Structures are given as C-alpha cells and as structure tokens.
Length: 212
Image 1 (cartoon, rainbow, N blue to C red):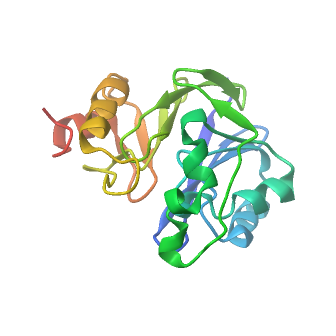
Image 2: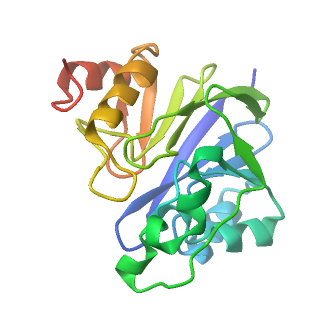
C-alpha cells in the first residue's frame, strides 16, 4: 500500500489551510480546500511534481473555495462536496463572500456526497462524514488506512469552528464532533482548516468545547 503524505500551505485573507495529499510513489494528489491564491497552489504542485486528481471541499465558506474554479480549470479535475452544502457553496450570502466585498462567489461541485459515503482517492478508501454545526453541510474526510482526518472548520486543535454564521449551531457542532469524530481511533491525525495539526486523542483529552 502506497504511503500518503499531507502537506499544506496557509492561504488567503484569514489564514486558511489548503492541503495537498499525495501518494509517495506516483505523486498523484488531491487538493483539499483550495482556499485562495491559485498561483501559489500551482507553485506547490510544480515544485513537488504532484499530479492532481481531485478537489475535496470541507465546506462552502469563501475562505475555503476562492481558488476552486481556477484550480479545477487548470488541471481539469473534479470537485467533491457534501450534497447538504449546495446552497452555501452557491450563494454569497451564505458563503460569507460579502464579508470581504466579493459579490459573485458561487461554486458547484461535480460530485455531491452523502453522509457515510465511501469514495476512493489515491488508491485508498475515503469515508465522507457529514458534520454540520459550522455550516449545514460541513464534511470531514477520513482516510482510515493512512490514519488521517481532514476536519475543515468543524474541529480545531483544542477548539471548534464558529457557529454564529448562517446555518451554524453550537449544539449541533458538538454533537457532530462527539458522534462522528471522537469515535475514530485516537491515533488519527487531524488536519484542520485553520491552525495546527492535532489528533483525536489530544482533542478528546483537552478540547474545552467538546470534552464532556
């Protein structure tokens, strides 16, 4: 089984993590949340000699999707997102683009995903976990063989995503974390949409929002 490696660049106006997950042997890769600055994304791809195959979106807020269409077009690759996030992705009043003065930010996925659906990426299964609370259609991507979870703005290192935007709910978010994420193996590494990498074990022990 080919080893997967995850690298990231912090991009855009609110320091969003854009992840490059790739096979060590073939350099086939998926891009998770092309946040902004498509030229910098392209630079990473060239420098690391990656072969992009798909884009995965954790949710539809502007700071995670501003470079989606540019990257999709440049590499001719499909975009995956949760079916429940259609409206947030499409409507700038929901994706918060108006906050930064952008009036026409609308993204459509090529493939719409359901909670619990399993897809294959980079020769490995990926479990799609719907985790509403930050947005109505937030989705985390779990690579069980690699022990990686890409949590978007659902779960941060010892924190959680904001819930004061349209579609947000703290009670729903905490339930998502406890029922969908904290049941994963404690050794799983968590790659959040902002901030530092963490682990399920660390969050079960020290996250002040989600610890019972």
